[in-house]
Image 1 (tube, rainbow, N blue to C red):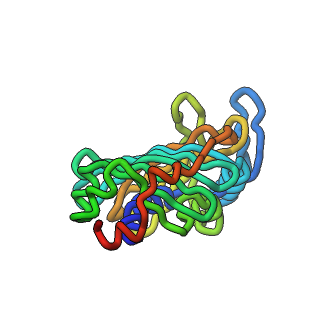
Image 2: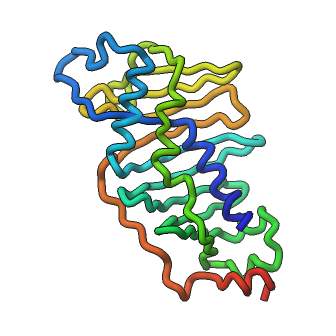
Amino acid sequence: MAANRKLLAVAVVCAAAVIGVTGCSSDSGDKDPFDGMSADKIAEKASKASKDAGSFAMKGQMKQGGETSNIAFSVAESGDCKGTMGSQKSGTAEFLSVGNASYVKADEKFLGSKGNGGAAELLKGRWMKSDKKDSVCNRDDMFKADELKKMKREDDADVDGKKAAVLTRKKGKETTTFYVAMEGKPYFLKVVNKGSDGPGTVTFSDYGKPVDVKAPPASEIVDPEKLVSGS
């Protein structure tokens, strides 16, 4: 339903800043594993490697309308995912995507801020189901190599103790900075977006680690018919 789609819109926007990779290991020491590669080629390798990892976790913040929203989610190799999102002002919500269905469970503040009215009581502590898989779990949508063009390599940096190649992409007033691991496989470690309507930062971790996602029990899911009728 509309509330569910709007709920995950922030997640999609925040995650959409990122994109694609192919496996590549670096030598030990100070040797540059990307020596001689163009910035676009580094981004392409990062895109394939991140996607090929199968599973990963992401945390991020995004500013929109003067409000900062937080999001954290994990994507399983199967394509299922789970996570949380929200803000101090608007409340928080949990989301699950299992098979071809999506589920959202929000706190009272979040439900109130979205104007659900009488439905808030029915949804309190329970999951709202949508028979549609959320695109936030789609690795192909998130790691889009074809969008990583016209990149420029900047000075290398450190991301949580990991050396990273720094790539920037500018479009008008908007600048997106990508941090690609220089040790092990060239995964995306962080993406920072500035100058857009929704600036934000996302970090990636736990590539290839198992993620367990299960649908909530039927007793905790709101009957869609009751939700529509408000009774």
